[in-house]
Image (cartoon, rainbow, N blue to C red; front, side, top):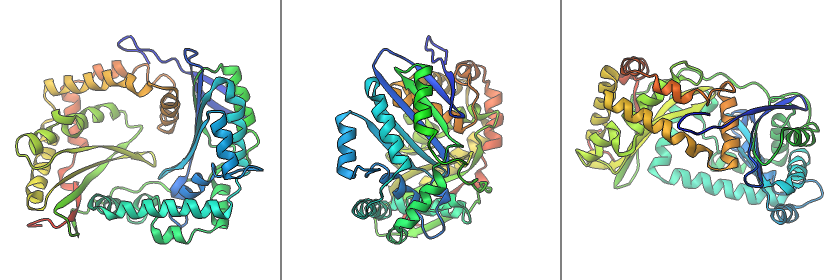
Length: 418
């Protein structure tokens, strides 16, 4: 990336039939490698939600001849941070390690993917942790509202399910189901790879051969396309609580939409600008209705949904929603002012380098760029593209993107007057 004196040269490295993006930097002897497949929770069979998340967690709970404790000791002794996770539509892995320990990091990561043990005691430990997390999520009004929001918006699609699973679904996950999930997911093809730090292209190619070439051929199954967001108006979940939590949103736009950055600017002005955003000014500063309110683009299945949240006293929920809808409509009708546009562009341009504060964040960002179909030079031209945005162009995007009649909300609590 270039802009304001900041550069991030990205190299392409090919090995094992795969392509990785690399940002090489030898200032600190640390290497980060991130990789991702399509899939994750989207591939969980109905009724087995949470299987992919459990399977991902179990990859570092013992592999090959190493039980959970021995595997953890091997990682600790070499100061390797190895993680796996399952998102709504992706299954991700990665490590961060000292450059001298790269061969050991590759060995342990390969062992985790190729020979996971799934020992019964480890499965039960991970299950208990996952069930506790699922229970905590639904113990709060915010968790209840979020779960219902996505279920209403995408009722017949994996995007509408609780991706981490429920206590009921997690309780029924078997070891054969976990192995089946890993067999579906972990393949040599379909991998998106990002790397950063003290590693040359030649050494990265060697690591890719050692890490990914032994994986089974083929690719994970294709994901079901995301259907249109289903506007559902307003839903109330009755919960005994002094406050109500509100999750609101509407359809967004494809991640490859040519007006992606103009949409980011519009949402920065409306809902994502901290104390300067219109929603914060209208809801908190002028009326004192809530401590905070915000919204942004939530990307899943190659599409972005606008999603936001706010919490307020039960007696003030109706007023808060009325103000939210009013500001949404004003932004759709008029777009930003010149001053708001300038502030949003300055923030988005100036904050970009903060995404690259360490090697793991850089590697993760490179993978995210590839997931979103960005070209190799996308970062390099971003500052110029933002600077070229005009008020009229962002206003036009606001009118196309923000549709007050489809803005939908779930309220969890005891709201007065709803």
